[in-house]
Length: 71
Image (cartoon, rainbow, N blue to C red):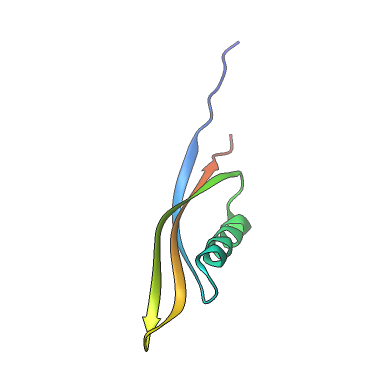
């Protein structure tokens, strides 16, 4: 009997939140979970903050969302 391996795909998304980097990660993950099935991991690639008038107004993250392709 031959064993089949698993194949995964990575999708990059950008998410933002006015609260924190942690919240931006959760926002991105929750949104990705609505359309991607089989998510096995998330990697934070980049973190940036939008600044206006000397204050941080938005925390932004770039995420790699890893999910297994269905057979």
